[in-house]
Length: 194
Image 1 (cartoon, one colour):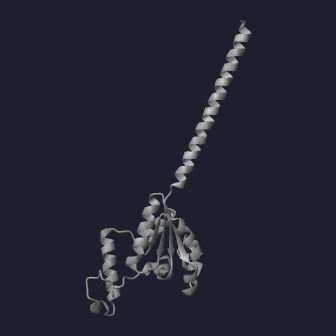
Image 2 (cartoon, helix red, strand yellow):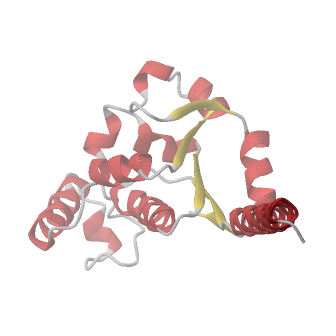
Image 3 (spheres, helix red, strand yellow):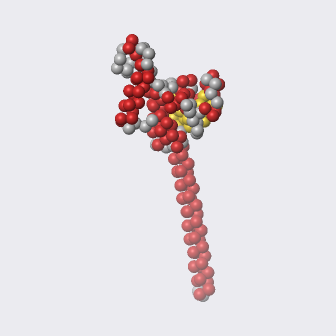
């Protein structure tokens, strides 16, 4: 066999090996893309309907939402009726704790009904929050928004309460209808009403 024929055979063999290697790389890239796509389908999701605007009831949806988002969950918190006050720029700063009818309050309802008891209960709770180093409502809202939580304001409630988009905290999704919240809720792994 001549040297030219031998070199041609070696070149053909190298090209075949290179083509086989390229085909294998393409196959591995396709498998990796499939794994990545499957991993994206496994993202958990949660929808929370927040209906209360008192200091103590603003915490649960925001803590759950920010924690789930930290774990990579897709989270929506739909605020409606008094829950909308949590997202209101001015009202969120002054959320009160209701002493009357609250079974966890360390005072009887007759005492809780006295004038000024809600303010006193709120100050006591705020003091505990500060002493404990617990995040404020505004801090939890900020963390939630930074983590990708979709904080939604109910359109019907905004109209009912005569709130404008500008009244809401920056970053809040405003004018969301119940149908939109239900769409997310229908596909969510976890649905909560708070």
